[in-house]
Amino acid sequence: MSPILLTRTQIDDAAWNALIQDSPQCVIYAFTYYLDIVCLDWKALVYSDNRGYQAIMPLPVRKSFGVEILYQPLFCQYLGIFSREPLTSEQAEVFLKAVSREYSYISAYHFNPENEPLLRGLSDRFPEFCIHSNTTHWLDLNQRYSELTAAFKKDSRRNLRKAWEAQWKLVVSTNIHPLIYLFVSNHSRKIPGGVNPNAYNLLEALYQALNVRAQAELWYAAREGKIHAGILLVKSGGRVIYLFNAADETGRREHARTFLLDQYFREFCPGSQVLDFESPEVDSVASFYKSFGSKEIPFPAIRKNKLPFPLRQVQEWRRNRLKTT
Image (cartoon, rainbow, N blue to C red; front, side, top):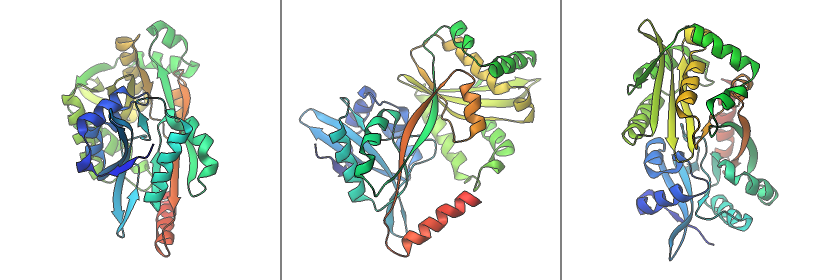
């Protein structure tokens, strides 16, 4: 196996999306229309034979100081290697070597959970990479609602009871603006380093693209005509992604997002999908997701800085500054 590097214009969208759809690693982040929205630009490592694309790896890129950087875009939890057949360690190693050869600076690149065992076994062969493990939480929806809620932790059962006592009304919508407003007003100031205003334009464009494909559920919790919380769920194949959510003080205090998730469980359980909570590395948030009975799922990430002096020092300074602001 010897993958080649293709630019965006060289990629066959139909062949690419067919492989993603059929791959054991299938996730919505990797479809071309999704990547086109969330990435400034992207390339790909592609292995093909006379049957067409057999293994692919999307590579989001941007330029800084004239250097092409591999990075992880917003609203895209993980990417990695996608294949028609289960990957072998040897095949994964070939892709990693190609990535290392091509990029001297990787600010972050996240691999899908299905790639995790392979990267764990290969970590010693790539000392140039800083490899670490991230965690998300998956909840199996292929069970009856009664079985699902029976596995809720005590906190979730109590919060759900309070949410129903609050008499929330479910509002199914196609207007993303109230959700963005809730986030800007109640959450954005708590984000380290702040939020680039363009992120909200990106979210709106992404929602519109998903909605026309019937892949988005946008639900709000309201009372007396006022919206207090909202969630955006994205559906594709065997996975539902809890992509974005927000709540004001009333919504948080009276567990409006728990109400919305419960409404989703009631409507779609039992189903053939897994709910991916897209967990940030925040203990309190992870604890909330685990309270629904979800399981921790690791996925690997890599970084690399082999830039020449002084670019290496500049990039490290920028990274450390973001961590402390």
